[in-house]
Length: 168
Image (cartoon, rainbow, N blue to C red; front, top):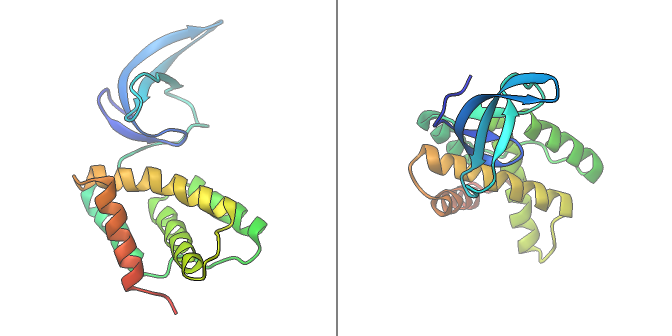
């Protein structure tokens, strides 16, 4: 259970702050709800049933886990799947688990492929590009919050790690 004031990761909107926990009635159904807003859009109010099993909400990673995740970009990531349809399905499945270390591996692999594509003056497959952007938007902001730095600093650091630890 989360508390008022907690910063969490909400699957659909990234970093959010819990503003309230209250009882609401819709039709004949009364339940407890988290009332939250995305950190980047305080005007958007989201109500999520406290007992919902369909919504993925997680606490922001602690500093030591954030540091471990950053260091993981020294490693090669996960196996590249040549078949785009299979790759999209597998990578999305890993991201949807909410496991930050697995998500970082997906980001790592996609960032390396993007770097390779740029070197060869090629474009990334659209699904890969969209997934990478989504992961970076959420994960890098979460890491920045946990490590008391900025998104830009995290992005620069990760790109530097990827270029220093080229996979051959």
